[in-house]
Amino acid sequence: LVGLALVASSALSYAAGSKAIACAAARGHTAYKLESRCFNLQSEGETLTYRLYTARTSSKAPMPVILVLHGGGGSGSAMEAMTLGEFNRIADKHGVVIAYPDGIGRNWNDGRSHLRPKPVEEGVDDVGFLHAVIDDIGNRSNIDRKKIYATGMSNGGLMSYRLACDGGDWIAA
Image (cartoon, rainbow, N blue to C red):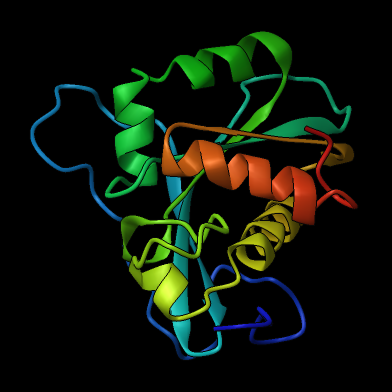
């Protein structure tokens, strides 16, 4: 999965003839009701998923995007639930789009070569995947491509650091 390339000429939620799949579920029980919606990307035969929450605003101005990255073993759904949707409240208050991507095998290839989760073993291009998520969101919403931010916890926090280093041409912070 090195060199992420989207199937089809535009970043559609899934390629023609492909079935949409559900985003990874949060593990365990939570009373929190997810507010975001699940979207899919097709890449090199893999279906990659992310959850998206768009600010409830009447403004037509381009919106910043915050990628909220889960920790190892987590999911976008779990990250939204664990934060009790507080990133969504930030989105509503400040006119922001929030994306909760799902790492392959519930992990990120954050650049640490001594760890052996699936994304590292398979050489997954998570920087490319997250860039493709931004492109897909840009096809759905009016986003400000100069205001793309990332945050995360644990493995997701380290992936945010990697984005700052390897995605510096498209990520602000």
